[in-house]
Image 1 (cartoon, rainbow, N blue to C red):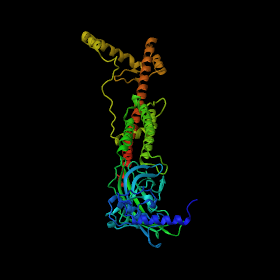
Image 2: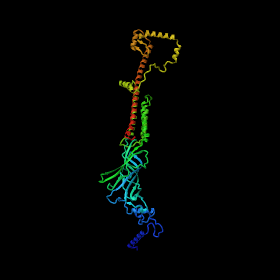
Image 3: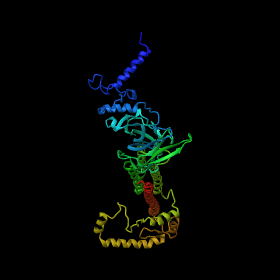
Image 4: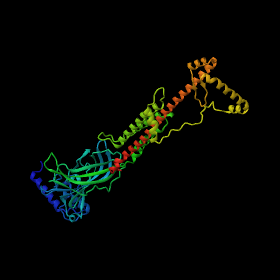
Length: 530
């Protein structure tokens, strides 16, 4: 049969008196120091007793201090003696690394340290009573901490997830600096990409306590950059914080917050080397298309090659350009400009080749084309058409050569002069009656055709059929040569018109390419981003 209830109470009282009478840290027989039972986190009853005022060694003093502080401590209640009192939380931010800026998802990923400091009146002590201990590192799960969260959180946890220990001082001041990786919402404007500058913010405040319960104060006006690890893509130009109060639609209370504004600028070297310079080179190749002569037959090939190169280049840089539809990046506009530039050069080249290969049998040159492109425009472009040579032109196989020189040196000069004299006398007597006049310089005058035959018959002079056929052949050859000369002259005029058009678009494309390049760099320069 077990002991009665009164006997159990008596034994408990005796045990308590025995613990109070025995000096702290020694057993009942004085055989040496008594080891404290193991401490259980979050259980204040597991701390050793602090009833004795005997001086102890530092480790034992810390044990007594823990028990002294957390006996009856409620971590859910605000650390204020009166309900109307306000907990002042001094807040600061230190950035360790700017991890990423996601243009597509409109968010900024950062590694930061949240510096928080407040006063807990229940966590103060006299250092002289506890081995001159002035501070303790306490697990943050055991004490009251403010519920400071990131308001503009885009992904992940709103509050701190890694609960580091808090630094508690004898005055009751609690200093807590937990690290956190936040993905904050940020409105990304890629208008001047890759020379863009972004303004992102991080808004911190209590989620449940209004200003009457918790108020915030800034430790510093700027973000602490002492431990910042430089990013390879972004540079922090400025990072300042401001204190704000706001009344939300959900509640009647006013809530304070501290908002930090980050001004970050993209480092454009990577994009300049891999994006802008290749585009400029492709534009220069497009300009050279109009300097290439039309006779070489490679103008269209060069245009298509440049267009194909630009298409492959655009496929390769798809992942580099921000994939957003809110605005068109400046580099995207320049790439579109280059694509239109190359496509237009193909269209113009086709037109120039069409003009170059025109002939009198297919096209008649209008008068305004002759006046404009053969007279006025070439003078404006400082083009001069070479004058025709005054020396007689012979085909290669008909030029006076060694045979002619041999005859000239071996035939008797006197005999040649007599024959020439007889030939001219015969011509002077016969040909005037035929209505045929011989002349030098390739020009032929006189009657021809049926009228000449009738005239010959009237004069009573009949030529043999062989001579008549020979004269008709000479006449046909002369007419054909005159026609070919006229056709060749018109063809040369069309070729010169094509050359003038090429020169016009050469200068036009040079100016447009220069203006496009200036338009790429000038807006960000005027905005102060370069």
